Image 1 (tube, rainbow, N blue to C red):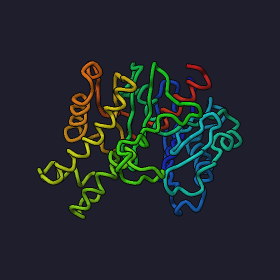
Image 2 (cartoon, helix red, strand yellow):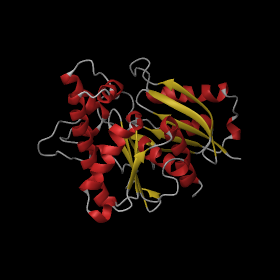
Image 3 (cartoon, rainbow, N blue to C red):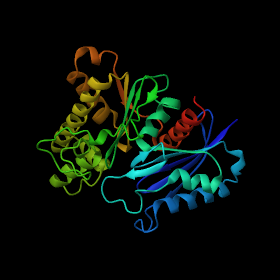
Length: 309
């Protein structure tokens, strides 16, 4: 059975795994990319961690079919390099991920955006298996997304498509975004937007966990904040439903485990906000693969691209 090396490069850590041709993760590990405040370039850390992982797992390079990389940021998937980021992420733009890893391992390499890979992982072996038209959204520090239409990932001309967080829902009167624009959806729909609003009211509400605990306890202020936040998420999704007419919307990120306080309200609000024909049959639920989605999806992207699956 074929085996692949899956690598998921995030803003704080890199996840590594050996994935077989059925999407099963056989071994995995993790390393920090921010251990010295990014003084060491991210790609340097990735190359070192990848070699150390294969050595530690006693996996010979020649036993692998290829390397699939999921990477944060704007990824030119044709060239396999980073062409943009939002905000301050030093020593990353311009990283030639594909060329560097091909040089290191002598294997074919594909590189795609992390949110696109999350969606593909779910389509292959997760919550979107068997679906052809899917919107995948990750809520976290920002908002990432991937769009599957007609069974294929929507990538655009350079592989940059599906940048859902920078869909502008408050363009005329909105909050400035790290990308330089105003009113981007992620400034309202990211988990950080919820935390920012909550901390203004109570400095003890430092993260999603604390906020949802307060909501479970019946804190009316926090419940009102959650209602506003899920409104923002739902209105952005409703616009996308009218463009892409998906069968399924999958919501990922750490907060996606909150069925009653997050997934259920979003589902109800989206369906109430779209034209009736678009709501018919539309499913909205939490992603399933969690931390493995990026590396699994990266391998599926490799298989689709290099093996034309």
